[in-house]
Image (cartoon, protein in one colour):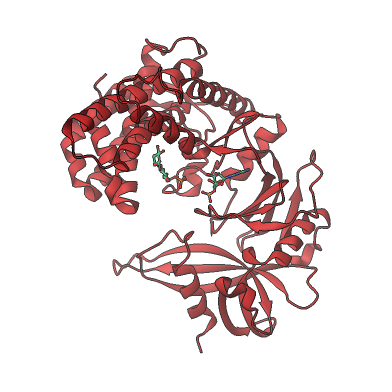
Length: 467
Ligand SMILES: Nc1ncnc2c1ncn2[C@@H]1O[C@H](COP(=O)(O)OP(=O)(O)O)[C@@H](O)[C@H]1O
Ligand SMILES: O=P(O)(O)O[C@H]1O[C@H](CO)[C@@H](O[C@H]2O[C@H](CO)[C@@H](O)[C@H](O)[C@H]2O)[C@H](O)[C@H]1O
């Protein structure tokens, strides 16, 4: 028989959403945040599990993970895949605990709680945003594309994104969506509500977000890959001649991003930042990245050149931004492009992700994605003939350049200009520095998560500063 802590350890360790893969940790605390009422026999509870990572350096780190669970007295074989453990629960005695995300009746009660919020002493609060009549009878189904969090779809009406790693304080996914929903932005999935609790120090714990389900959505990354596939299969045609040309979509993405940035400026305001201090942070990030990816050292001079040019700008404006924008965070619907997942860069502490930043960081994220798409596609089509490889490389550059130009021109307000300088000198310097910084981040991300893709950002680092 294992203890509650051992069961939680084993369950969390193997989950896709667990961010500490490969690191040793122990479960050092379990705090019951509250309960969702309504289940006749099986309590639904929300626990906050504290994990402590100790790599032996003497500096233990803790992280909090959220686990909504349904506690039943007899095993439920339908939920075998979501079995967390069997233990003596402090409030409910001997129970079999299952991850509630996978339990339809638990998730129905989560949804209904938005309409009839539990009493104040339930520990968790369901907040509803006015403006949408939630379909309370919609059937829940966990999202198959589970990533860093767990999402549950309710019919074709709404999605509940349950944050797994929890940080004390506000979650920018909620606060940014809320502000954009209030101004009626057409480039996001509207916020319908959220769930929160209080931390022991009184600060908010944002637990989940209920938002519009974009039922006609196609993933921007997949659409871009399809366009590249089309181009690669027509070796002698140019990017503007093949059926799947993406440039008009890239331009629409640029326009959508510009609108969202403007709405975020109106909602959260604008500040100025010293360019030299931003350049210092980029240099520091590069120093740390070279420790993880030593090959980056070969390109350090050209990367630092981009940061020096940035430092020379003096001051520049910063504002609330998306923070981790790439094609995988864009969805094409029949009503245009939508941006999702405003949580910011996963590697940064939450407090840092909320800080105003340059909108050019988001633009740079998209430009990097236009480099990734053709190179990722080329990797998935192994080829021995050097002539075909060279032709593809050439086409890949062409595809990336065409779509980058289209996005930049539209972002800068001129979607007709598909080539030539759409940006001022200062804007160009910022784009170059943020592209360099994102490339460095990607090298570390790939080295840790997908080493076989490391070559994509490394090759880009070698090109920084070249036209
Ligand atoms: N409102 C929505 N409607 C439809 N699909 C969505 C919606 N929000 C996200 N998605 C899809 O789910 C995926 C994961 O969402 P995301 O917010 O990025 O979650 P995570 O934080 O778990 O990575 C997205 O790439 C997108 O394909
Ligand atoms: O979506 P997340 O918030 O988890 O973002 C992380 O993972 C992304 C990969 O899924 C990573 O994006 C990089 O790879 C993409 C292709 O898979 C590419 O389109 C992006 O341009 C590239 O940065 C992202 O950087 C990371 O934060």
